[in-house]
Image (cartoon, rainbow over all chains, first blue to last red):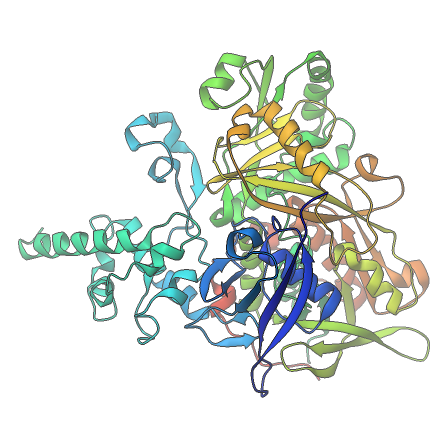
Length: 241
Length: 394
């Protein structure tokens, strides 16, 4: 028999034109289940009015980002065991820094507009993907293959970012990381946007984005590198190159 | 003259592709979805862009549909696809004896294949089981499920289709003779109930199709057939890897971002709203998957999930065809205003939509032909950035 725990989900609720509240649901769970499984069971068996977003259930689509006890998590890959113990209360809230549509669902349109503005790559040559192999180990014939980029566009980094909380026009971690991935020497047209007051200099280097990223993008490091790229591009520009 | 209004229930692959097709043919389209895009079976699909090789021996109709649509999707929505090909590998004598039928089936269905020696296969995929006996390279691919649907939805929205997500259909509007004239919905974001009138209602709810037809007092021949998928935390391959044999459990391993995903199984289920994970099936995926890619044993599970295929017809599980059926309930039950589409596969979503839109357009007297095979889709991100247009219908 799998291990059984009792846990209580304390879920943020918000319907249009109604005050927000928290509803609690006490469930028997297998601690190796994912948070999303427990939330889906709340919807299936306890409260059909609960709204939450989810699709792939294995961290490729980025739909199910939420805050679990105040920390941004992709709930489809977060086991109950990793954030709780028997009889724990788990507070489930929507991502911050986005308008709430209903309950746990937020409107991420602004993030997608910014990803479009920097023309973030959805697929890239496999030899440019920062996975286990260092670049020099790829063979030339490998370059014909592509893979989906690591960034799931899940919004966790925007929710965790202390600057995004106060400055709505700030491009934010995922779009800046996508700009870094382009490299400004290949895409000098992005310089004006990146070098603007809402661009790469607005970051406070808190690295909260890197701490919560579920998909190895490491936006904090990429933003620091994008600053170097920006300075290089401006120096090149100064010398007319 | 106002455009005819079509309500599509379900924003999985089928529903969003029908919305795209009908918007281009001049219909006023509203998509109703109780959750968000792809929250049911479509989101939880394995992500294999089928070449048709899997079905080339026993289910040629599906195989031909797959290879044709595989080529089209590569062209119209490259933003969501890893077009890196796939391998069928033989590990024992039974696999080897399947090779002859496999080659003949692929040739008959127009699926290009190239035989590789074990050494050649290991050179391009070093994590394959080193004891493999033979390998065939075929044009499989992999895709991101949600973004695939969003790209269709974005393009549909751009062309005027409206999406009402978090809206649950509570009933069908019926005239005195049982014909369907619209839907009654609950907007789950506001708890408001409203009625939408439509010339045609399309039931694109997949494994849930029977719930909608029951609202009109009809049966639907849909058999929800769930299967498990297990994602592991290492990207060990760059291509789809299939076992060279008749379709069975855990015989496909796919790359997906920094993971590999092993699938799947096939069993019957009653309540498809929540299908619990079965521990024995998780073990089976590890056992079967690691026969193809032994290094899976060194990886950790990252996501474990169940998805419910909407198979149509009789028989059970593996023996049922993977093709699709579109029912005009005027023809099957003399009920006007309702069309049900179910069955099929993610790979054939565009074709399913074309056939369904043909049926809907014939009912509405629209003669505009389907154009979706040649129209590149907009960025999936535009689903979120293009606003819903004001409604024009009554």
